[in-house]
Length: 168
Image 1 (cartoon, helix red, strand yellow):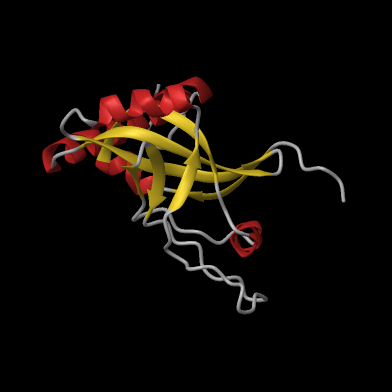
Image 2 (tube, rainbow, N blue to C red):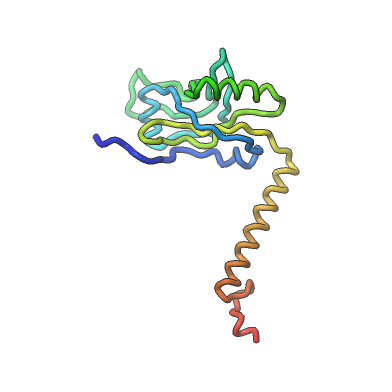
């Protein structure tokens, strides 16, 4: 079997960027059992309820759902078990110190294979209030309209669908 190279995305937590202000992003490896890897290779995982927690000076990913492998037998894994994250001791100590600050949490943003190894992108995040979410949504929509108008102007069309030559 040829060695995998590159990055293959398995799952993304789109709601994470909507519900939180992202301060810093880290890449970490995962400690997995065989049937979890096979289930991930089939592209099955859910990150929406996931979060990172500190236990005995180590960081664990909790709440991430990796469904049981269909072809597995009694060796199948528990779908929502805590999974240890593999990071350098310096990064872990820095995260522990930062997480003691109130209002910060660790959330998973994406799960992927990088050169054949399962990795998770976790973020140090601060929760958004309802008005922050609305403001972000309105800003995103305004930027989309500005881009659309600039695109129409560069092609010679107005925003109403007529070309500039027909308006004269």
